[in-house]
Length: 289
Image (cartoon, rainbow, N blue to C red; front, side, top):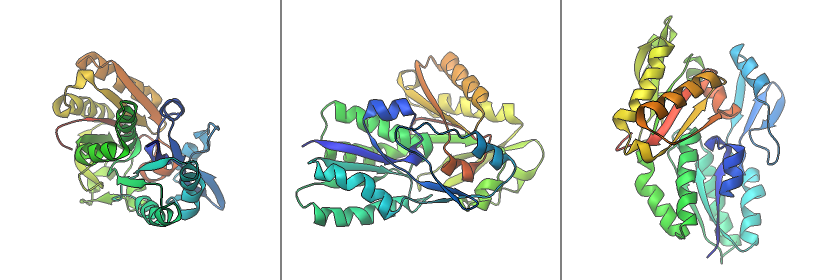
């Protein structure tokens, strides 16, 4: 049976990936003062420069999870066309988006009794979630059924490692997205927090680096230390308006580990509102998070 893969804008997929994968995107929203914006608009390339400028000025940018209306715009038309739907959702440890999609899916199953819809809580964020989509599309193209792809994701999603550093813990603390530590050291001059997404899909501080260069070295070393057969992986990198450092990270990973393909993208405003400018993350398959 034919099926379509759907994810949300927090997957931070590039425009090229979205087109090549043939996936549909549920857009989360963000708010600057009284203005509402969609994080993703199909067919439109969004300029994030102003958003990052405001974030650097510590402007409060708020966000909202994917609503029922957002789901209605994307999922029912696919079901009406005769295709089933596999949704790969933003981590339930960081957003209520997955729960909203699951609730909507219950109604869609009653509305379209001849169609199937499966929702996977990826427990991933940003291009980690994008990496889950990447592998799902690959399996689909190999002829795997929707159920087989969903089963693979459930068994393997916790092998998608998320390692990142940020410039300022203010954004994570302000948005309530930081768990497991008071992270007082993050406010100290020259100290850069090191974080990851754990098995529960939440963010945790794992250590600290003395300076940005040391933080980048930690990201590079993590790929070699924790990655599985790294040379044959596609490595994903996202950055919070620090493209030069993302390119440096990509070059070093290619050079040290003989990696052939690295995909990188800018962090969208919804995640940037909570992570802040200067965030830099690398995603890869490892034995454990």
